[in-house]
Amino acid sequence: MKQVLIPLAACVAATVVLAGCSGSGKSASASSSATGASASASAASSSATSGARAAAALQPKSGTNTAGTVTFQQQPGGVLMTAAITGLPPNTVHGFHVHEKGDCSAPDAMSAGGHFNPGGKPHGQMTTPDHHAGDMNNITADSSGNARVSMLLPSLSVGTGANSVIGRAVVVHKDPDDYKTQPTGNAGGRIACGVVAAS
Figure 1: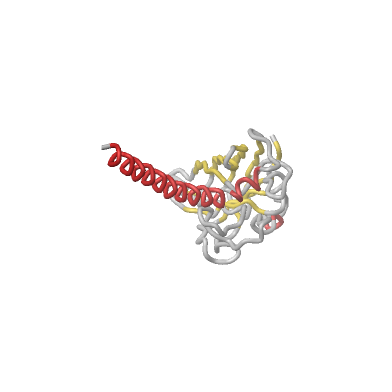
Figure 2: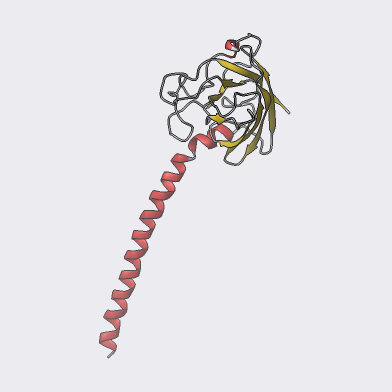
């Protein structure tokens, strides 16, 4: 009886060890994938202080009445951006980006330069691996011409590093971003602009 039990126990132990190895392999792969996915977020927030804040007051440009406020708050996984925008044509969709220069002095806001792109990546949707740090989702106006939006931006920081949003500009565009046309997304003219400053 003892001779039967000993081999059986050995088989059970071997099965447990093999299962553990298999599970460990999957866990390592998932961990590696997660590490890769969060690399840009870690780099962006490395020089940022959790809870640090910045804000921009959007001013009308290109003869529009579009205005609003945009706030940025550092979070563990990136920057939480919240915007409240008024004066948009009712029920319309608009491109919305962080631009490289904190200069909204031009009447058409072209003084703000191109999209903020410290990583030298192609333009794209913020949910894809390749996109500008300043690429954000389109905003949609309601029937009164107002838009409220909040999103987490993993490629930005509120700090002093290369990806810091401070000293940049936030721009609302006339048309929707198609997320394909390089390097602007074919979003049209600039109808509101605000310089981002620490708050």
